Image (cartoon, rainbow over the protein chains, first blue to last red):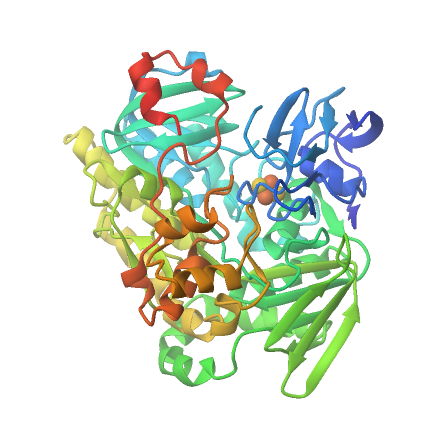
Length: 97
Length: 468
Ligand code: FES
């Protein structure tokens, strides 16, 4: 869905649902997921519908993922770090649980 | 900076690191006021100058000269002595000017003598069928990905909506190599009749020639189709856009649909602090009631920038300066300050063409007030029909609607449904948005975990005051 304009920054490796994903320093978690072509990052608590980052500016909360064991973090506000473990999220809505 | 290193009190707290916040912090710190600026992103710049300190987009022509003007603002703020804290999420502000902030999972309350809220704007929702599908994003999201990470839409992209920024975003994406199949323009043609009245002012404003150049640039490369209906289709992800106009119905396969519906003030923090707001009938949104120095109904709390009503990035910086001059004057009556009159004149010039743009791009009623199964509240998946039915059953306002349907109760706290719910209730009950009002908001305005709350160095009683 997205391609990179150039290859600036250094390579950062994440684990997304246990699988290695290549990102660049300067990415947020949400941007890294989009760049890696991951189709959704959570499902909704009400109907289980898939959601992907929508606003990328901290407004919509559709980018909620579990990061290093902490649930419901806004992926678009968190910069990637080497070795970070990201998990897509099923249905939960509360922050940090 | 860690939360633990923050002072427990401070002269001026500025919230938001866009043009208004940067300009305000720079001016105040230079005048000798102890200033802390909190910004929730990894770098300052806000949305307009997003990524300005670290963008991987090297070709300056892509984002344009207006973007790069942000460098000066950042340099000024950095040299001023203001403490700039990024990754700082402000989740509460109360009338006594206590600021609740969370940095890297640790929370802190800071007592400020003056506060300037510079939380800017957010994109007005464009609630169309299918707008929650992965593959549908806001145009602002695509712009953010471009500025901050150098990511460009790959594959077939369609843009839909209305507003002056739509054309800027399209131009930036095209320059960066995106392939835009079509722009579906939802601005009602009738708007021209009313906008023409404001044309003379606009023709004198700095936006006139820039706007025309952008329109020409985009229209030379992308077919622009006037539509009065847009729908996103697909099973688990967006695959096709359907649209209708006077000349019939069409469908188009695409990979990415970017929606834009203009921008509106991001009012959540100011509302939760208890700042008085009013309905702006031209911009069709709520905005804080401010005086000529951007002071609000609460002493010591100002709202500067687009958060005080949409006027654009350059105006936002001027507004930030005016608010900062007032804050400094209150804190340090003997401080040497720049002439406010000259700043007011520059601001007036920036705001001159606004009425024309507001009216020309006023979103169509059908796109502000959806019908049927179209989702209104994305978080709790509440539909337009549910909201309309509840209003018919006697639900008079957005707060009652929360209790009925849970709309506005999800993590986004109404940021993506508040205006829609207000307008739907107003329509069903033959009232108006000013009467119906907006969601009542309480801190925390950003979700904060129990662990973060527990890290607050405060008493149990104080903690209870901010828990939901
Ligand atoms: S994508 Fe909207 S909050 Fe992160």
